Image 1 (cartoon, chains in turn purple, orange):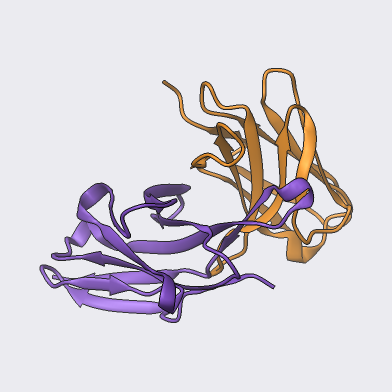
Image 2 (cartoon, chains in turn orange, yellow; image 1 turned 120 degrees about the vertical axis):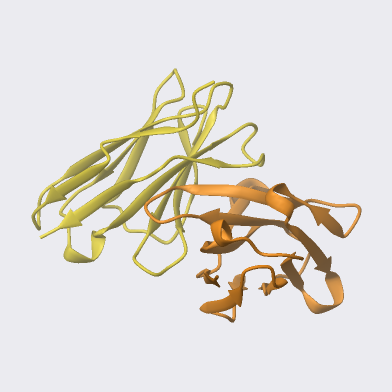
Amino acid sequence: AQSVTQPDIHITVSEGASLELRCNYSYGATPYLFWYVQSPGQGLQLLLKYFSGDTLVQGIKGFEAEFKRSQSSFNLRKPSVHWSDAAEYFCAVLWRGGSGGSYIPTFGRGTSLIVHP
Amino acid sequence: DAGVTQSPTHLIKTRGQQVTLRCSPKSGHDTVSWYQQALGQGPQFIFQYYEEEERQRGNFPDRFSGHQFPNYSSELNVNALLLGDSALYLCASSYPPTGTQYFGPGTRLTVL
């Protein structure tokens, strides 16, 4: 079955430090890839997405992600973290496998980012 | 431009009862997807509605059903509630069905 793995449940960084959140997927082809952020009690906000083309994707709030086909990974990065970045981050894939060739969304379990002042 | 809206915000039910959650998509979107997010977990796909029909379904029992109206708004119905149905229920809309999904704030359902 297709799956999305976020190996880090929690990540703690100091404000101003760089950040990398890991995401690996299991799928026979290249899916559509997404990163979302969720603040406490809120819905999910799209940070960035990859469909095709340049494997380095720029998103909102200074985030970027790099798709590496050979590693089946789509890691999220930010060069300098701000205290307001503390939130839950979810990696998601949209893979083709439903009836009629439609697309099915699958989310990872999330990584909680804690930012120390 | 209003984003995705959901109602109610919070809901408390008892085991065995039935519940209906509502979602209005972002303007211009015609596809609505529903997700269940248990505490500490990622969203789990329940189903997707497009052109008033259920197009895709995740691994959820038939107790979970839905509907989409001509104005693209949608309802999620859950029958015979179980304690394990307690979760945040998220609605997302998109155009087209494979387009980027925009999420609402969710409905927090507590089953006692």
